[in-house]
Length: 249
Image (cartoon, rainbow, N blue to C red):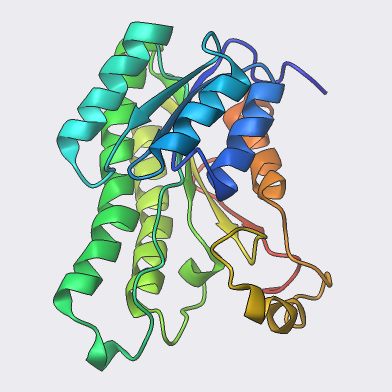
């Protein structure tokens, strides 16, 4: 299928590598215009725009934990494309792993600021933009993790940020539905996905824990985001979509 996202404008945070780039590839294939953001990987952003075309894509450098940067992203999106239809809150960090009692407040706060506060700010600015420029209609997709469903013992900050993202998704969806605002909010929970974040030395060990027998690809998350970004999913709201090869079944 093609053109499932024709004429849609999507902001994808962390959209120049890994899962975010996989989402962007699927969105461009389906006719969307994409605004890709990243904080450090500026070169990846330039390459993505060269690949997708300046008429269909835009890169904005952004720290998702900074409110001013969200305003910048919205302003540049409206200036180039005139509206916001979809937000994919994908940017995130794994943080420092280890026992909770050894975790510094600084390391904890970094993960919460990016993974959870960043998603809150994204929702806030996207909802206001959708109300103003898109007739109060749109879709927000929060990329959480299976760690938002079952905690990882040596990743307390990451688990808390992803669990918080899950309930932020539910609360926002309920609030918008109560207002009769047609902006749907859903969460996607990836399992182990083949990206540079996964250490090569641990891949075989991780695959043994996945009933499907292999890791997922960024495109696997991209395809579910295509569904959630268009009107095929008009009755899906405040829901959790787990994509993990049956690991949590």
